[in-house]
Length: 66
Image 1 (cartoon, helix red, strand yellow):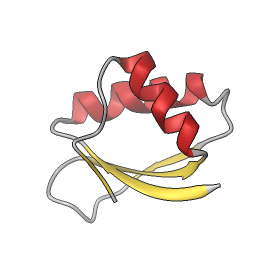
Image 2: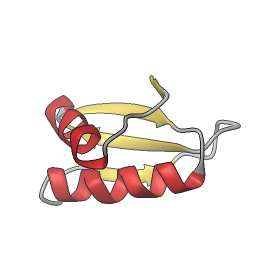
Image 3: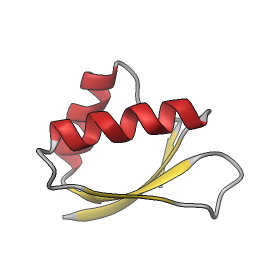
């Protein structure tokens, strides 16, 4: 399991990606909002494959991955 911060352009993108990540990881990924950035961000603890699957499921990916 890895912890990453995913930064998005809008709150709507972050919300849609979070929903896709929960579906893609079957609830195994831990997702929390991260308010330490000027843009909407999610702090994700899970497998990198879960993030990739969520990007495919949602049809877009995060703007930045830290």
